[in-house]
Amino acid sequence: MSVEEQLNQSVVYTPLQRMRHSAAHVMAEAVQDLFPGAQFAIGPAIEDGFYYDMALPRALTPEDLPAIEERMRASVAADHPFTQSRWPRERALDYFRAHDQPYKIEIIENLPDAEVGIYQQGPFLDLCRGPHVERTGQIGPFKLLRVAGAYWRGDEKRPMLQRIYGTAWPSQEELEAYLERLEEARRRDHRKLGRDLELFAISDEVGAGLPLWLPKGATVRRLLEEYILDLERQQGYQHVYTPNLAKLDLYKTSGHWEHYHDTMYPPMEMESGEQLILRPMNCPHHIQIYKLKMRSYRDLPIRIAELGTMYRLERSGELAGLSRVRAMTLNDAHIFCTPEQMLGEFKKVVRFIERVYQDMGFEHYSYRLSLRDPNDKDKFVDNDAMWLRSEAALRQTLNELGVEYFEALGEAAFYGPKLDVQVANVLGKDESISTVQLDFTLPERFNLEYIGEDGQPHRPAMIHRGIISTLERFMAFLIENYAGNFPVWLAPVQAVIIPISDEKHADYAERVRERLREAGLRAEVDMRKERMNAKVRDAQLQKVPYMLVVGDKEAANDAVAVRLRSNENLGAVPLDDFIAIANALVAERSKVLWPERTA
Ligand code: TSB
Ligand code: ZN
Image 1 (cartoon, rainbow, N blue to C red):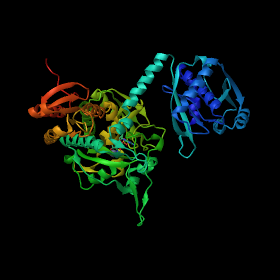
Image 2: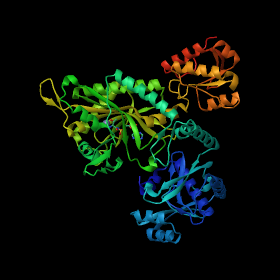
Image 3: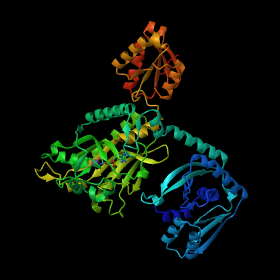
Image 4: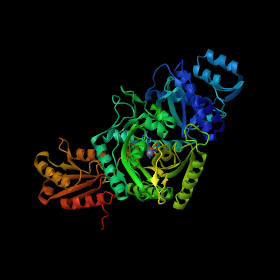
């Protein structure tokens, strides 16, 4: 959305948004007072709050926020009226030039109108269409939340501004409830947990959006990979390996270069004159595998799958931990089938998705039918008949499957419509995990064929699908969904063995670890010179499912004293029983840490 569109949007503010927008002005008033020379860009209401983007004489820190809040409270207490006026643009330009406000000047210069809206409260005057509350005293309880960098107009080539986020609510209770939700979200945030639990890291020296999987995160990833590859094998997928690079021409033929150009890394020029590209998608490679031999209708469907690594030049402002990255590995597959088989294959994929979500224990997700935007000629292939036919086929199939879905214009792939599974991250942002995509475009562009029952060549259809998405985004979602408390089968470390005395019980602790490892469980011994209670607490903070305390009694009886991550104390359990129980929970992919006990 452009700045001008945002300014227009303010016209449809709800009463709550209007109050938050007024709070943004009051915040700007406070900043103007505390930071002479501040230059203001835009300050809209957003979901749950407001922000203002500003250029300031120095970088703000969180410690600056209380003073700004206090100055805001003074404005609210003064109960200034918001007064509206309309100025001829020349007068407004003169005013903002005199006050050294280049961003306001740029906005006015882009507005077609002869007059512009001006709002003033107390000493602060702003270019604004409103609407606002009548008086600053009507602004509800508020809090400033954080400072972030934001490019002017979201453009990396324009100046980086400072953005202060705030929230405001009609009542103190609502404010407090919201702050509590935020705190909970912060606790679940995969970027924080990824650091605390040593799952992954992002290094400035490696580059933005290029995550490093640490041993524990890599363990979870490998478990996910094994899980999904097994299921795919059971469902008739054939796995391949293909390179992350290809000739640019391959992506010209596919249409990626034409329609997906903005998200692709620039081509690398070889000495031979050949141009190579880091692939943004795996489809063209799998298509080449399909094309290696003549296929008969009897061979179809052919399901070619790969944990395919690919690269996308996502905008730096969009990058977020593991959930939006530039280097990623997709649980990808391309299903080549006859047009008659297509909807049946589509349904199988939807059932596959539901199976996986059940195994993972996901409860909150929704289906999005992603359609093209008929007015966006650049982003989608131009073939009205194809779009109408395949969008209708998808709707019909979804109705037959009886799944609820919502429709979204402009979210299709460039080659065809898709069904996406949407989940909310802790920041409330909607993201696609699984995707199933119908495609009549690439088979055409690559001239794919199979020999039909009639002995004649026919054009196959294609389905692109990702069940667990990219391992990166899936991991981000898993961490947030479980708040870092991985179920036993996925926990990177399943048990920490804690000897009561380092000297006396170290041997037995080692033996317990060996037994667990032989039984396929992931266990570590905590041999640090720390008190036992501190070790228990640290293991709980690391969200390890089981703490196994071992002392004289346990060593004598071949037992372990089991403490759960939830802090429940189960007392001594024979080691063999512990192993059998833990392994049964792993096999069931159970969500509980210990079976229900009967009294
Ligand atoms: C399914 N060609 C198809 C494939 O065959 C494809 O690439 N589709 S996609 O573009 O929709 O990407 C598949 C999935 O990758 C998305 O649904 C999303 O879950 C995930 N994904 C896309 N971009 C990113 C990114 N920048 N970081 C992490 N995951 C991403
Ligand atoms: Zn694909």
